Length: 464
Image 1: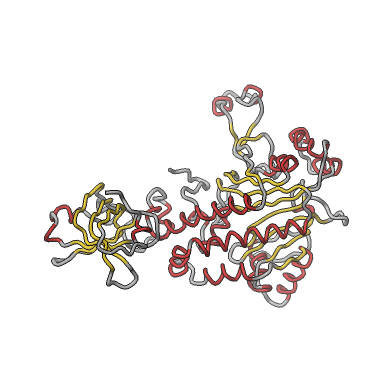
Image 2: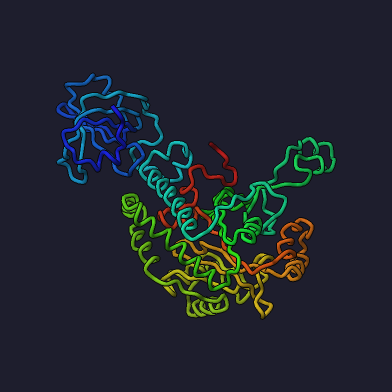
C-alpha cells in the first residue's frame, strides 16, 4: 500500500480506511492494555498517534520501538478522542526499519541548543529544528516567488572571485598550491602558478557581479552562499551564510526603500500564511511574543530616518540616563546592534529604515550625497535583530568611483571589469543585501544564528 505523509493523514476524514504511514518515533508509551506511539515524518510539526493492542504484536518488536526508531505502521484511520489531535491509526501491522539504541542524543528531554549543536546531523529530527527547517524552505520559496512576480531575473554570481566586494579583506583563500611547503622553504607564493593564475577567494557578496546583471537585464536578484573569514564568535555571525541581493537599474533611494519594505513584509506574510503550525509551536516554546511581533511588522509602516536624526535620538537617550554598553560618541560612529535595537524597540516601536550614513563607515561603491559627507545607504533595522538589510544607491560616475577606490588605497586593477559598467553606458542603479539567516532569526524567534542553518560554519567549527 502506498505511503501517506503524516501531514496528509491528519487532514483526512475518511475514517475506517486503511492507511500506511512511515516515520520516526517521538515517544512510545506502553501499558498492558494499550501502547501509544507518536510518529513524525518531518512533513508537519504534528505527530500522528499509532494505537497498538500489545496482545496482537510481538513483545520484542514493541520493546525495540524506542524514541528515534524508524517504523512503518499500517492500520485503520479513526477519529481521535484525545485532545489536540483529529485522527489516529489503529495499528494492524508494524515493521521496524531501524532500531535506535538508548544512547540516541536526541532523547525526549530538555537539552539545550548548545548541546544540540554538537549533533547538528541529528538535531534536525527534533520538533524545534524540524519547524525551523520547514520555515527556512518556505522563506526561500517566498523570496523566489516575490522576485519572479515582480519581474526580476534570478542571476547566478560566482562563489570564487579575485575581488573583495566589501574591501574589508576578510576572505577565505582558494588555492591548489601547497602553502605549507612554500612557507617551510621560505619562498614567496607564486600565484601565477596557481589554478586561476592569480590569488582567488570565496566571495563575500555577489553584489558587484549582480550590478553587471542589472545593467543588462534591468532587475536581477542573487540568492546563494557567501563567506566571511571574520573571527566573530557571536550569536549573529556565521562564516558561511546565504545572501539575497537584488539589484535594479534606474532605481533611486526612495524606490529602494519602498522595495526593501515591500519585500520583507511579503516574506513575513508568507510565513504567517504558510507556516502557521510551526509558528504556533515556536511561539509557545521559544518566544511567546513571536506572532505579535510578526503581525506588527506587516501591519505598520516602517519609519524612515536619517543617520543624523538617529544619532540625535541616541544622544538624547544617553543624556536622559539610558545606559548603552557602547557609549554614543557622536556623528560619524558606526552603530552597534544595541543602538539599532533601541531605535526600533524603544523609541519608535516599529521597524526603521536608517539612511544617509557618513561616507567613512560605508562601502566604496555607495553614491555620495551633495554634501560630500554622507552616502545614500539604506539599512533596515528590525526588533531583536538590529540591521537585517543593508542597501544603497550605487555610484554611477566612473570618475567618482575611481577616486573613492584610490582614496581608500584599494587596487583599481582588481575592479577593471566592474568599472567598465561606468565606462560603457553607465546608469543609475541601486540594490540591497539581506542575510537569509538573519531573516530566519526574526521569523522563527530563535536566539542564535547557528540554530537557523542546518550545519553552521563558525570559528573552530567545520563538522559534518
